Length: 291
Image 1 (spheres, one colour):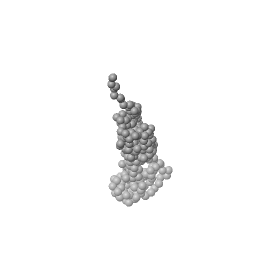
Image 2 (cartoon, helix red, strand yellow; image 1 turned 180 degrees about the vertical axis):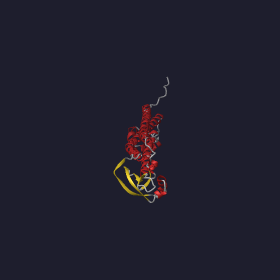
Image 3 (cartoon, one colour; image 1 turned 120 degrees about the vertical axis):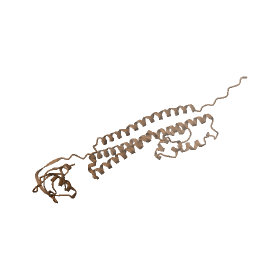
Image 4 (cartoon, one colour; image 1 turned 135 degrees about the horizontal axis):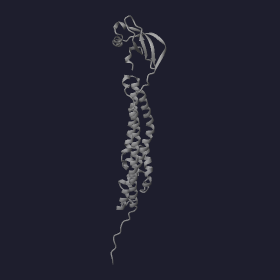
């Protein structure tokens, strides 16, 4: 009588689950590469466009503003633009280098909004049914002490199938997490891009004031211009003698710029030459000081 070879265990779906897990792993890796590259293009494109406007903006006029309204507007605008880019970079980094959460993290909503947990759980539900559970919390409870439905211990093939099922569910959950992170980046891009664009445009406007336009006076206007004490040294040098500058200067307005700056000529006193000067907001100064 010949002896029979020992009976081999039925894999009980282990190979099918392993194939699904392997396919899911490849799909997750490919999708991850695509999402990372897209996130890089989104953020880098916005950053390059904003940097191009800033670099193409002449910043030389900022120094002439002093601590004025235009300087405050320019600094505030560029700060808002950088903050907007920083926010986008923060969300992009989550897509480029996403966190790898455990099933317990998903079950506890650790590091993710509760609404995301529901969507992740919905995506993994078909695989949860294979383990006779309907939520990630129940899955984590079952994985702490896995048993058959009748309470008996799992066979080696059951353990392998459970391990592959756990891997498949984890891959599915993390894949959905990456997709949700990318969707959030896209939504934030729609929100932040107009804000960054407005901030950059305002900065360019503040840093590049419109050129002054000269408007000829139809009729020369005579007036007395007060002399500010701080302007005395320059005016004495321009007029040639301190006697030519006495409290007020009688001048004739020749031209006026759109900004309100006026070009004037002094009505000469005896032994004092006529000199062309600037009258700006009540301050009179040599023509060479025109901004």
